[in-house]
Every structure is written in structure tokens, then in C-alpha cells.
Image (tube, rainbow, N blue to C red; front, side):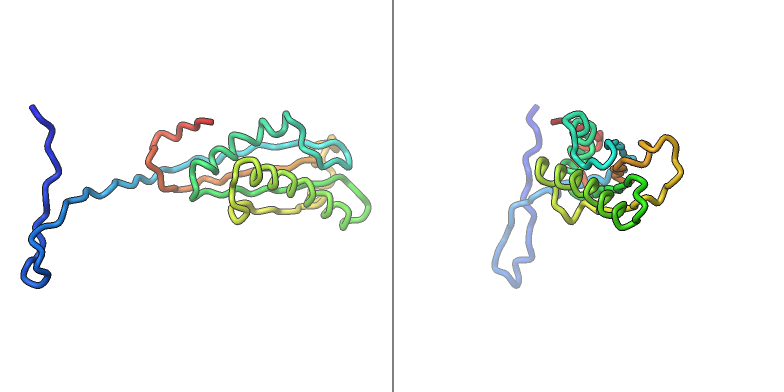
Length: 155
């Protein structure tokens, strides 16, 4: 038994003079619901550098962004407890910016898909203090276009 061959669709030949055009099947575009994905990177006091271990924890979210161009990520920087809030804002921004640059430069993610938030020391009073020396990376739940409905991620 042979598989069916694409057939030709008859066009309206009265006005165009053409009698047939090749039939091209429509590609079925699937929509998939991506669950929220998140991770947190912790920093030493007054530091903003990302370690190799931190990079490995960021990679799955960056891969998700690369595989789903309709998705985006929030990068929320938090700081130490400096007496001056301007210093806290600057440090939390630097931490978030370093994470965003890593995602953008290593994985080729467009900067428009990465939102940076500098929270400063909005969470003063957390104990231990290292809890607010962090960057939260959140890729929210989203409905995305995909040809792969299984959400399998590969490197």
C-alpha cells in the first residue's frame, strides 16, 4: 500500500487563467503551557560575581528561553544592608545585570526578553543576612508556540 500523495487544489480559473496550484498543507502550530521555572543565586557580602556553580544553576532557565522564543525572564537583584539605600540599589542592580549579561551573551537571548529589577534592601531584617544577598531568576508560567509539546529540554 502506498502512502497518499499531496493533491493539487483547483483554483478559480475564470479570472486568473491558471488551472491548478500545488497543495501545501498547513503546518500545525501547537500551543504549550510552560510551568514557572525559577532559581536563586546567592552572593558573598559586597560581591556581584557569578561563580561557575551559579552559572550551572542558571543554565536550565537560559535553555528554556532559547527553546521558547515567546518566553521571558525576570532577574531580581537583592543587596546587602548598607546604611545608604543608593548603595543597596547599585549592588542589587549589578548582581542582576551580571546574571542578565550571562544569559544574553552565553545563550544568545535578546536583551528585550530579560527584565532586570533592582530591589535594593527591600527585605531588611531577614536572617541570616546572606538570605538577601541574592538574585532571583524567574521565568513565569507562559503559553508559548511550539512544535514540541513535550517540554523536553536538550543542550
